[in-house]
Structure formats: C-alpha cells, structure tokens
Length: 165
Image (cartoon, rainbow, N blue to C red; front, side, top):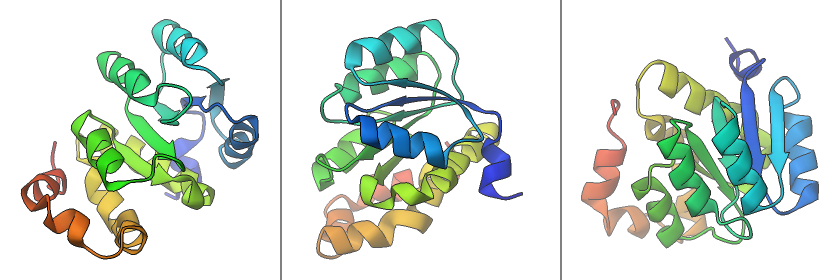
C-alpha cells in the first residue's frame, strides 16, 4: 500500500502561522480530512475538542511545543514541521518531548510519506523514528555539517532508533 492509500480519509490537524504553508499542505494531503489553525489558541481549541489521527505542528509562531504537549496528552501523534527552528537542539527537543517525527519544510513535498510513516508506526505500535532515520537522517547530516549531531548524543539517538516504542 502506498502512502496515499495509508493516509486516505484520516483526520489531521495542521497548525502553522503561514497561510501559504497551510494551503500547500492541504493540497498535498487532499485525501485526508483536515482542520487547520494559524494560531496557538485555535490549534489548542481544535486539539481539545476533536479527535485526530495525526497533528502536523509548526514550532515557531504557534507555540509548537505547547501544542506538542497537548497532543501527547490527547494521544495524538505529532509531526513537527519547521523551517526557522531547524536545529540540532530543536530536533532533540522534539524527540525528547514526544514528537513522532521532525521534518523540514524543505521536504514538505514528501509530507504524505511522513504522515504515512507516523500512522503506520502508531497502528503497529512501532517507533516512528526508525522510518525517520531511514528517510531524513541524511538530510540532517547535510544540514548540520556531518554526523556530529548524532555522535554527540549517541546513546540518545541509538535509543530513538530502536524499532519498538
């Protein structure tokens, strides 16, 4: 089954303060049922009053980490999608705080695959970071100037890369 079929009909919440990003994501994820928010307050309200299969959260501009905490409380796996907060520190912080994925907006055209990875891992009670490493570790190696970001935190990233949660 391809990514489109895995995500078809799933209910997603997307929170980003940039309307053009929301519009692009809606186009890419058009087989899903989507709610959107451009502010922390609206994202919080939607998370508190609806059920979602996945939340796609920006970090900057919408208090993404606070929304991540709420998504975790509500049992909604969260995919952090960011441009401005693309750093080793935010990557680790996202993983530590329970994000299921951490994707760069530069790779937004692959969002269907990333959401499918999160859904599949959740449904099979597997660790979504395994697929994340497979798909995006090379991107971050290039972005962060090599593998030092993993080596500095080797025990943490080895634990994150284990197949089962």
